[in-house]
Amino acid sequence: MLAIERRNRILEKLRNQGIITVAEMAAEFSVSEETIRRDLYKMEVTDGVQRTYGGAYIAKAVRTDIPISIRENIYLPGKETIADLCATLVDEGDTVMLDSSTTSIHIADHIKTKRNIVVITNSLKIVDTFANSADVKVICAGGTLRHSQLSFVGPAAERTLEAYYADKAFVSCVGLDMEKGATDADELEAEVRKLMLNNAREKILVADATKFGKFSLSLIYPLDGINVLVTDRQPDAVWLRELTAKKIECLYGTGNPE
Image (cartoon, rainbow, N blue to C red):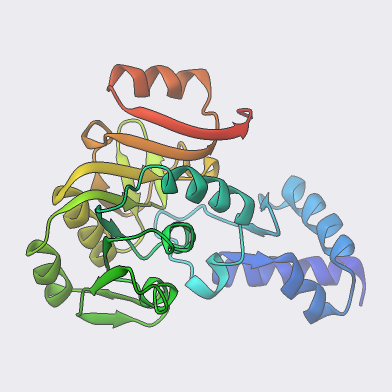
C-alpha cells in the first residue's frame, strides 16, 4: 500500500470516529508505529489533524463524543499527572464524587488504598476499580447505561445524585472556555456532572491542556463556579490571569505552557 493511500484511509477513520491511536493504526496497516507517527505528522500540516500522545484526533465539530474504549488509551501521561495531583486533595474520611471520565478512572486508581472514604460515581469502570478496596464505600448511580461510555445517565441517575452530598467532586469536560465555561458533548452526561458539582462543598474541575480554549455542545458549569482547576501542565499567562481574577486555585504538573 502506498503511503498516500494509507494516510487517506487513516483520515477517513478520523473523520468517522474522531480519534485514533498509533498502536491500532500500526496493527491495522501492518507497519511500524514510527511510520504511523510520520503519517500523522504530515497529516497535521495538510489535513488539520491534531496529534497527541499515542494518537491523533479531529475535533472540529461542536458535538464530538468519543467512546471510552478509545479515550482510555490516549493522553495517559497527562491523566496520570492530574490523578496524582487530585489524590493529594482527598483526605481519609472524605466523601467524593467521581464522574465517568477516563481521568476520573485514573483518580480512582490513585485513591483506592485510602481508608474510610466514600465514593459516589456513575461509572462502571470506577466501580470495578474499587472492587477490592474494602476500606472504600462505593455508591453507584443507577439509570440508563451509555454503552459507549460505560456510564449511567438519565432521570434515575440524577435522582440518585440529588440525594447525596460530598466533600469534593472531581469532574472533567470536553472543552474549557473562558466565557462558555466547562462543556460536554452529551447533554445527559453534562447534567450528571453539573449535579455532582452542585452537591459538593469543593468543586474540582480536571482538564488536560488539550481542552483549553475549546467548547462543546452542552454546558456543565460556568468557570467562575469552580473552586479548583487541576491540569497536566502550566496554563499560559492569559489563563493564569483569568483563573486568578475568578479566585480559582490552579494545580498543574511540571510541564511548561505551549
